[in-house]
Image 1 (cartoon, rainbow, N blue to C red):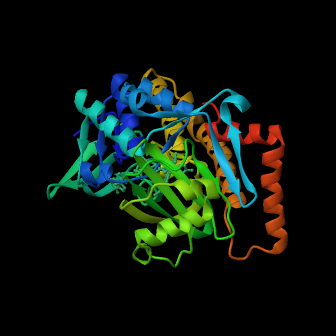
Image 2: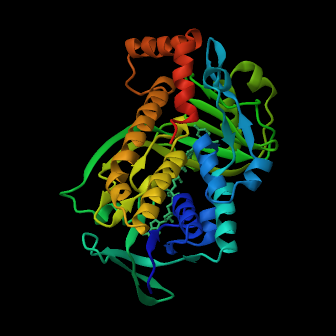
Image 3: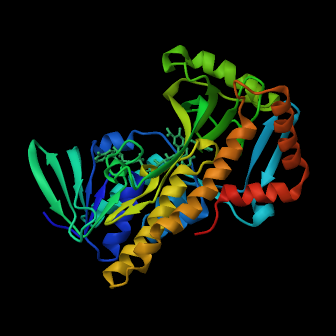
Length: 388
Ligand code: RFL
Ligand code: PHB
């Protein structure tokens, strides 16, 4: 088999890249380890930056998002002293779109079907070869048969646990990491959202987030110790706990009900450099992980796709400048979002070793945001996303 760009991983970054390249007349093959149903069953991101919305339109799959997504012009930050609002529209004239990653992925699959793109599901033993030559290739097993895919370029869109990053020699790779001493327990439920906008809550019992997907679908998270298991948390216990952590007026009126999904995600900041080695590019979670506090993971995957898409279109026209610039351009934006997600995480969570001094500084950070328009503007600009 032969193609121009072999794409490892059929999550949002692999599908979006495939969609954009096909529309530009560049052939791709997507190799995905799991089934389409499995990819679509993952409940993850919920907040899309303006640049992400633009890219989905550019890929020709923004129509349902415009119909069913919800633009948000601000969010709330809450402490035991009360809550205040960060107005994105007023601070920087921008907004975000609340539209689930599950729906984005759905729309991308539909768009790929419509143009007859090649996505091979349930492939195993994916291995990347000759990455530092002009003729790389990929080997894999599909339906029990060993296969070979020759290509010009390989896009490693296979997430944090994929094979692509590990295919770059260790001597070339530099990794930067912070692991946080807590996780997020999240639930999805068919209930009316607690408020009209997201609420990020700093509370002595730990962080909480009230988010949503639509008028009848809510997404909530609470900070839990890493030792907790999903089985330790009945729906009842979850609702009781999150009610304690959210503002009293919201907690008193919020609708509760059975969870339809419940999971615990550990929090981590991680970056690998460089994001290109020879003919292999790393994209999205394969290259970097952010804690979900800033809602940046999916959005960073999309900005990587943007830079790589431009680079590959230029390469097809004979110029290597985009290819050479890819890693640097992507990493500059990645580190900006790394800093923001780390900062949001550090001002909103309870850390097990937090001293009385740390506690006071955290409170002061939140007072600065509450009282200084310029601080709210900085937060708003980062939350809606640096332009790309
Ligand atoms: P994905 O989604 O992990 O997809 C990678 C795909 O590669 C496949 N794969 C392989 N395929 C072939 N061969 C192999 N050897 C393979 N190994 C893996 C996998 O099966 C999978 O299908 O990475 P991608 O495409 O880079 O997308 C990244 C995003 O999924 C991720 O950054 C976001 O979900 C992060 N995230 C959020 N991002 C936001 O922008 N806004 C949010 O509000 C937000 N909230 C979240 C989040 C992530 C969360 N969790 C669970 C990690 C909330 C949570 C709780
Ligand atoms: C979500 O709705 O899943 C969500 C929203 C905002 C975040 C993280 C997750 O910061």
